[in-house]
Image (cartoon, rainbow, N blue to C red):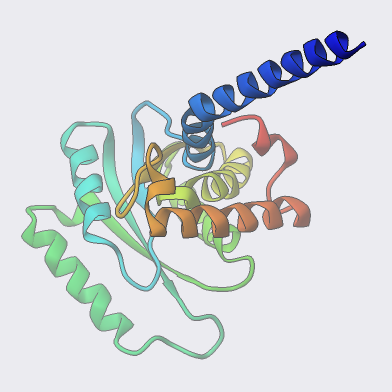
Length: 220
């Protein structure tokens, strides 16, 4: 009996040790996979590249947009700027828009190569943005767009745009932009951990409220 119990303990110990080794050896692929889930990246050319912003646009996003124009992956760049909804306006936002136009032109971009679209921050913000931006682009005959979003915001943004784009006949290709972390090391950066946590919550919220479909969990 004692020998049987000893053998059983040895077997259990070996199994537990194997599970620990498996966990240690596989945690990085699991975390990388989780990062790529929230920040999917597509391929292909499009009529436009959409640069998502807030009240301001990041320098890296502009560089990405110009690179996609130069490489021929996109024919035109669309810069999205968010402004407060209702009657309240962001101070000097009009001046910023004018400054943005001048800076883009200083980078040798022609006026017909870029478009600035201002959107309100009405709830749900990302879905509202997608509706306004794609409705505008649809009037210009746009049928495909590369969506350049920041890091882990990409999946929620992709599906907000994709759902609106389906009704307008506009294909959306995701293109994540990483500034302070990457999808293969996000857990090593404070910004990456914070963004992964909050974007996971926001993505879940959009799912629960029906702003994006359940299939967004399985399909890019």
